[in-house]
Length: 186
Image (cartoon, rainbow, N blue to C red; front, side):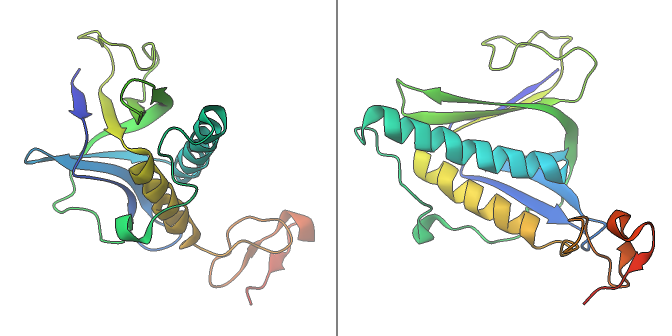
């Protein structure tokens, strides 16, 4: 299967299509006249953003600041634009791996196609009969900007129920903390 590699991408973002409660989440990379979009779950977007921040914080701590890792996202790198259209999904993401490239001072993000037999993450060679892979190499500043946007995209969904934390629909929801009774929104 193909490896969609961007080193570095002109743009790498998380975004959504659809209304809250019915949104589809995507990672999208653009560069060299091509765009790759992969579908993933909301929870995967959240975990990726949180793990990216943790990885960058750890690199900053371990290097004592000798590597140019910003403590937070730069407003100059903020990308709040919509996903590129037309949106053509290459694959659904199963596993996501992160790594720090010490030689290039870059973050490597790899999203692997959902499969029964995933391959070794971040392998140099992906088997021809293996899953499709989206691999991007981005600067620490771009990774902070990606993380900020990704968490913002997730928060733009339905508000959580104050009792159970599950998403609220405009009409409320059946809340487990209310013994199956409908909890009103608002």
